[in-house]
Length: 151
Image (cartoon, rainbow, N blue to C red; front, side, top):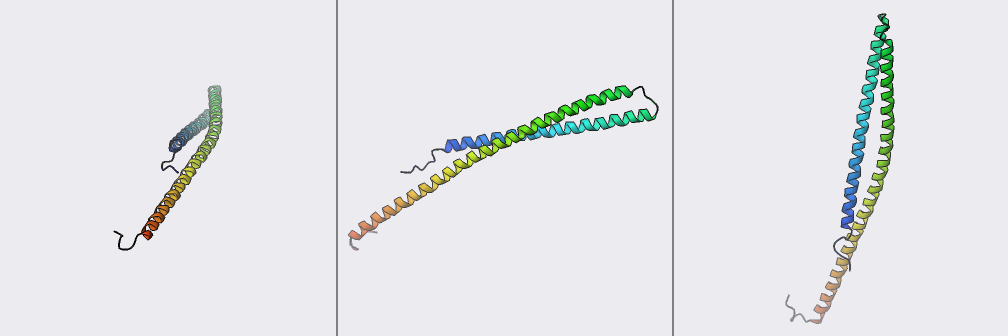
């Protein structure tokens, strides 16, 4: 006899929750990537501003601040390289997280297909049960004359 309730319903729900958590984690990784991109963009803008300031001082004939600007620009380039390295690592994490999400989605789909299969089997069982009950009623009715029927 086929059970009416899907016995793996809790597993299906757990897989749905797991997929949601993995998607949330991917969303946080994307937000981190955007933050790093903004940080890199601001560092590059600051580098451009400081280069322009240094060029203006050189054009005005003031060479005393040249070393200080160069050192500061080199520090900014180092910061930009660090942010780029962080972006590369976050990008790798995003790729791994996408693979996890794909696996979790496939696992969820397997459970949903099992549930659908269970539902079809149960409907088939109910239809067969109703058909056999109707057959029994028809057999019983054939044995009774029309005058004895009370329907």
